[in-house]
Length: 162
Length: 258
Ligand SMILES: [Zn+2]
Image (cartoon, rainbow over all chains, first blue to last red; front, side, top):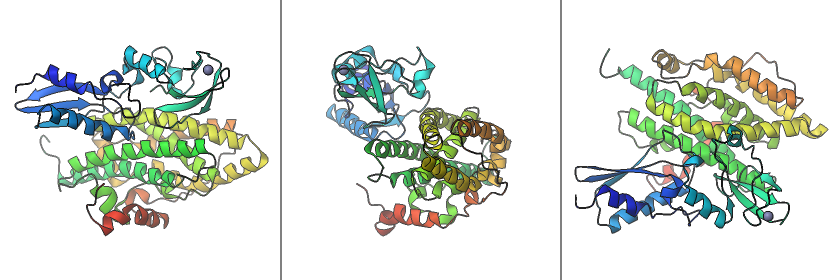
């Protein structure tokens, strides 16, 4: 095989999440690993939520990226264990998310309570105020909840902890 | 015995996986019926989000079923081409949505069950079941939080909401006994350390349901008679209608894809 697995990983790491197009699948922690077995490339990914419809789209874009590099023989394998957690989102991913207008998740290591949606002081991505309240546990996608800022009055998405 | 499992054991394993898959699929399909009909936009979105999680979980189980089944079927075979008697979901999950109180009561009973069941499944000897459970339990915890909140909000709400949710939990109670029954395919898998012995979860389930009912000022139903059969393919008339809807396209144009 002419292309190294590092090079393949680098190519794939540019694929972005269709729902938050400023963040790559590497930053989200979806892209796990690339292996080469003989003349075949095996890519390991892990889904965020079981029902996340973006996963199909992401797989399609990964295929396109691999084919564009001239890689024909490959397999994309889904790994469920250990289950994905928002703790795997990189710091650059969290920063981009905030700049995009989505309040990033708390680190679950800081408090287990956040896993059950008991978020404390979610910061408004528009004005930085922590005077905010939850409107709904579920938002436009499985990974988000709806919030509103009580200071600047703007509604915003909060990326839930998982 | 080392080596290949016996045929009967393979069938038991397949049946057990299908039981888990069918539960997620049928409730996911039912919740999907709320899409565009929710009382307010936020709750409409919430239910379709939960439905998506459930259908995603169902897919993991159907994919695993396809690997376990030596007939070389695809994951789509199981939801789209099996008959009613082959579905092994709990009767509770095929019950109609009725109103918000029924939908939340059904969700709450089942989420409470799933939480204790998946917690136990993390100890299974089967690696793939452990993987799926570890993923599902995170989602189920969140669903349970949501359905518990609604049971409390309605129970401890107005006179009318209290009455509606009390009636719903009373009516659906008779379908909950089935959670803790053991079928033949399960007992074989329990012996091998693969399946969860649900008969041992009853106390835990009763305790957690009781805590929420207490907070919701609801009275715990006391009925001792339970309607069963779903796990073995004997369903209420509701399942036929669900499958007619779910399977229509694939039965009319087999193999059609997007
Ligand atoms: Zn603000």
